Length: 445
Ligand code: NDP
Ligand code: 2IT
Image (tube, rainbow, N blue to C red; front, side, top):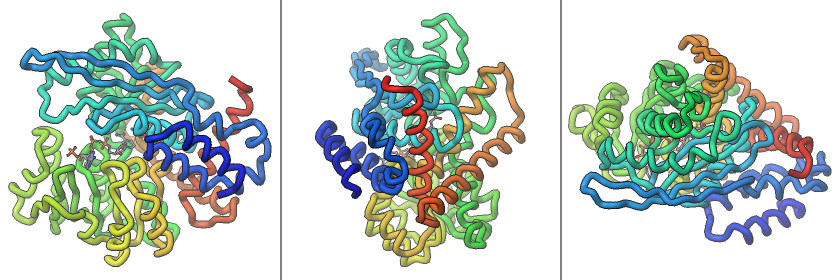
């Protein structure tokens, strides 16, 4: 690493011990920035890197609630408002037992550059809780969300900080959170949260946007090699919001998804994942993925091992961080892999990214490939600000244009900095330069 970057990196490590995911996310960006600092000494001069690695504000709070048996439960809530040089803090809330401040910081840090890359006026933030929604009744989830918002409401607002969903937070949770915000503030402030239901201020296509966008992005990448996803064999990990609509878009474009997963294992279905059945099992019943295989003859459930061993031409990791490691990448490469796009945030380990690079596999990093979700959140904010609601066709058209533009930005930036075809550098540099210029312009604040 460049010595100017190294000095900042060492200091970031020292100040943020015990946060391996945050450290990994910072390293990933820093490894792309050497050529940028050569061209822009003013960034080093003005300590832009140091400023971008320190969140503007970090909020940690107690979330007390009462479960169905009358017992008091205590969780921890987080909101890391990372950078607001380009617009209000924007980013999802994650409810999962693994959530801690380091995870939220990694996600918030990534969000800053992703949001910059979309070209929309949004800063970066992230939040969540170690609350585990699994096995909880609707009433418990509602009471938890109400308690969470009873503290969070004072920190957010349509011009301040605009949360949305992430793992464990979907339409149901956003509804309870929005309801409590509305009640406390006595304001119907639609733009304070995105991912709302379409009858109460949500945007059409927001639910589908991340998964759709990821597939639109990989289609653009494949196009650079004269290929398309039509007829390709595809693996999608996860079976939540992002995975579901990635599968839907792959099928619309003529590809065949032969495997998907949840945290209990994976299913292989050589005749192509049946999306209606998957949604019944995961979305409607909130059941485990083995129930899919129980009801479909062509499918089998595999409780252990790796989904990536199934083999495919296209792999879309859409579950969680560090879910595709070096040996799994090698296995995918041996199976004839052509392209990977990250629907999840940081799902591919650094060693796995190197394996894919060496093998000449197209690799679309999450900052670019999954940016369609937050970009459509920004479209939801636009609709809320103008008290308008766009049609499905128009909104999907906007999403498509945004994904094509992000792809173009990555390709042109990688070319400009002498690393053609390197989407990691392209995304990191393009995302960084825009936010760095704004940080400089706004002075020392
Ligand atoms: P969901 O909660 O809807 O789905 C998450 C899926 O991933 C589930 O299948 C879940 O399995 C699985 N999963 C979660 N954690 C783990 C884990 N530790 N180990 C194994 N499997 C796990 O979340 P989303 O689909 O919204 O999010 C998926 C990824 O996409 C995350 O990385 C998120 O940050 C990223 N993302 C989401 C966006 C959005 O708009 N929602 C936008 C951009 C990125 P199980 O059901 O067993 O828990
Ligand atoms: O990681 C992400 O980009 C998201 N979870 C979506 C954030 C948003 O504000 O829509």
